[in-house]
Image (cartoon, rainbow, N blue to C red; front, top):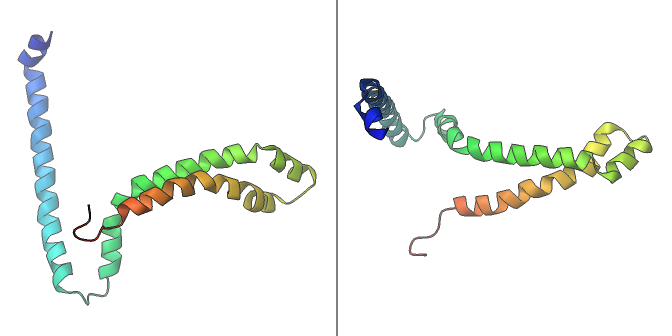
Length: 130
């Protein structure tokens, strides 16, 4: 079956198209990024430099932000179903107070537990350390 698949011209055209598209995308990205990076390095006093650098770093941070958001959401759903939140609702406390004081504190623990090692791993190590 593998021999039949490799002999199929549609497979080879798809593979060629994918490789050409990846090469063009990489080439265009580099053609645009290298002059921008060189100019940002050269003109350190450029007023929008920090904003541009933050925007370039955003795609690198988005996966981490998604993980933290998912952890917080799951923990928040679990915390809102807990007995102490039900009791607070029964006493008639405002929803904002219940969410902030009772639920968010418990829901933040998994996110903080994840962020600690993630932040430590992202810090640059001094030269010469193993």
